[in-house]
Structures are given as structure tokens and as C-alpha cells.
Amino acid sequence: MIERDDMTFTFAEYQRRLSELRVRIAERRLDAIVITDPENITYLTDYQTTGYSFFQALVIPLDKEPFMITRALEESNVFARTWVEITRPYPDTGDAIQMLVDALREFGLGDKRIGYERNSYFFPAYQQDCIHTTLKNAKLMDCFGIVEEGRICKSQEEIMVMRRAALATEAGMKAGIEICRPGITENEIGAEIAAAMFRADGETPAVMPYVTSGPRTMIGHATFEGRTVQDGEHVFLEVGGCYRRYHTAMMRTVILGELSDAMYQSQEIMKRALNEIHRVVQPGMTVSDVDNMVRNIIMDNQVGASLITRSGYSIGIAFPPSWDEGYIISLKQGSSAVLKPGMTFHMIPWMWGIEGNKTCGISDTIEITEDGCRSFFNMDRDFTVKPTLADQTSAIDLSSAFPAKNAAKKTKASNKKAAS
Image (cartoon, rainbow, N blue to C red; front, side, top):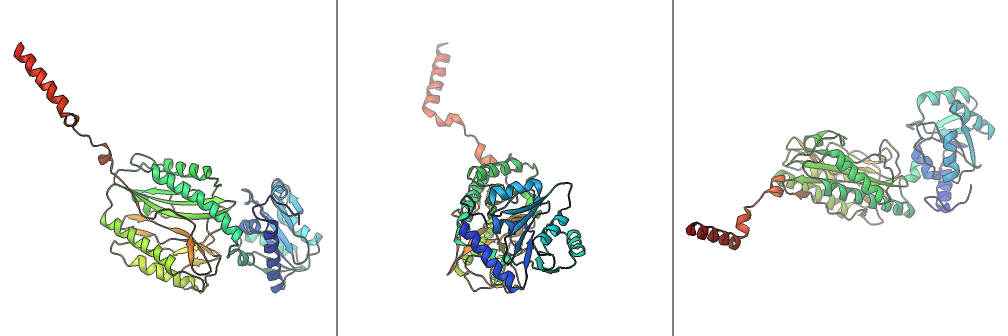
């Protein structure tokens, strides 16, 4: 390992992560593991690139130096960002999987027990089949989740990085709320959010902001498509700020016009759910307990809305196509996973189908602490209500504003008429 002081975290933090991972490797009786998930590679080494769709792998032997297999272009990211000393790059005209097999043999692992992430998005079945048919003397075993066991509870260094991401999230959300008005397009709102996040030292998020208005709020995972926001509508915003690939996220809602009884009730129900989360959630609870609590609050409404998704999910390191770690742990019914200090969640007690055609949200990203939980944000949770266009542009009779001046004009005109 190359000791350096210009990575996202201290060198000691990466040493800790690697040391704890090797304990888990030994517990599974493996000689090495092949890590292909980009989030896991980043967690262990600080390596990142937008070119992760090309095959890349971090090989971690139980007791030898780790090494990386990358596309030749991406090798520069290893040297510029990580503690990794050994790489085996392949050219664009080369065979990435053959390079991995050759490297495993080169470092004495060709006939060992090797774990690999069988469920990784970026290690498809075709490539896995190639290794099985080529590396015939090795025993290949699924080790999916072995790195995530370390990722699920964030260290204090990670929490601090997520707080940097939260500053970008808040900046983006405030800018989006501020610019919302009738006549503006969803794209313009999205552009303002993105610009504010980046000015607040945020980096490219795994997902750009979700911006929908009026009837389009009922479309799942839709975002800005050029629609012009109309007077009297509402705007749904969901923003995920990013710093060093760590994310935090929040939902907010803007009302352009009068806050109806149904929308007010929805606001209060979501706020009650979030208040209950902050009052009750603590280590030792199961995720199913939390989901049931949130779901019962949201579903007890008179506005026709429902909670059609999980009530929250783990959040942290992410690359496109998603900013969540929900595949590691999600707040949903039937799961017996237990909350522990250091876990971080995007809590989403949102409401879908208010009065049949509206979706609204107020959400929070929280950290599970030793005795409860706390938010990464300081923003108000109420809906932002802005006057209707008619209210903003209504004119008054200016003559009524200057009675003395108008009376003098009338007297002068009467005198002139009499003289004539």
C-alpha cells in the first residue's frame, strides 16, 4: 500500500477497512476476493471514474498485496487517487476477463478459493461464465455482500463527508424552491438546483434532481422534461447532493397558490411521521418496526393518498444509476435487520395520489446515533406556499393612492372651464 495524505479519508481509515474486510475473508475460508462493484472499490481504495461500465476489478488476497484490473485509460485513476500499487491494465482491443484470469495465475491464485460478487451490476453472467470455463483449477464462490458488511455502518470520517454532501443538498433545494413560479419550466428549476449544488462544492450526483409539476408528479421517478409550471399547481422536488461519491437526499414541495385542506393535511401527516422518526428511532429497532410505524401514520389519511414504496433506504456511496444503498438495507415490512449506530437512511414518508392526482413529499436523511437519530439538514419541512399569479400581478386604481393631487387637478379643470 502507498501511504498518502491526499485521499478522501485518512490512510489509517483505509487500512482499517481493508483489515476488517480480511477478517471476513478469513471467516469465509477464502484465499482472495474479486470486487467489481464500483461503490465497493471506492469504499476500499478511493478509486473512482465515470468509466465504470468498462470491466474493472480489485483483487484482495488474504495475505498479499491487492491489485487492480482496469481499462488502460482508467489506470491513471489508480495512480492519481488510491493507495493501490499494482495494476494490470488491458487495452481497448484486449480481453478484460482474460487479463483478470492471467493476473490471478500470476499472483498464485489460479488454484485457490476465490470469492466474487455474483450479484454485481457490472460483472454480468457472460463474464462470470468466462472465468468459470477458463480458471478451471480454482474454486469460485459467491461473496456478494462481504464489503457491504463494512459499508453499512459509517465511520465518523464518513459522517463528516456526508455532512459536506448535505450542504450541497440544502443549497440545491433552496435554489429550486426559490425559483419555482408559474411560467418557468421544470428544466429551468433543475438547472438552478444543479448550479447551486455545484457552487456549494457538491459534485456530480448519481442522479440529477427530480423536478415534476402538476399532474406529472404522479409519474414514478420522472424528472424535468421541459414542462411549463402553471399557476395554481404544485411542484415536487427531490434533491440528492454529492461529495466524494457520498450522498444525502431530501424531498420538498412547493405550492403555487392556495394551500388546500387536502394539501395541508398531507403536509401535517408527513411532518408527524418525520417527528415520530426522530422521537422513536434508535439502535436495536428492526427496519420492519420502523417501516410499520411510518406506514401506519401515512396510510391513516382522508385525502386518498398511500405510501406505495419502502419508507426509507440506506444512503451513502453511489454511482449512477441510483444514489441509494437500498440493496444493502431498506426499511420495509418483513425485514428483521436491526438498526445500529452509524447507519444512515433517506427517510421517505411521502404521499402518492393525494385527491387522486397529486404526489407530495417531505423527506429527511438521518444518522442512527448511540441513543437515537439525527438529521443531516436544518431546513424547514413545511410546504413552501407562494401567491398565485393573479395575486402577484393584481393592480390597484392609482388615482386612489393620490387623493389630494387628484382633487387639485379636478379643481383646476373646473376653474378653467368656468373662465372660458
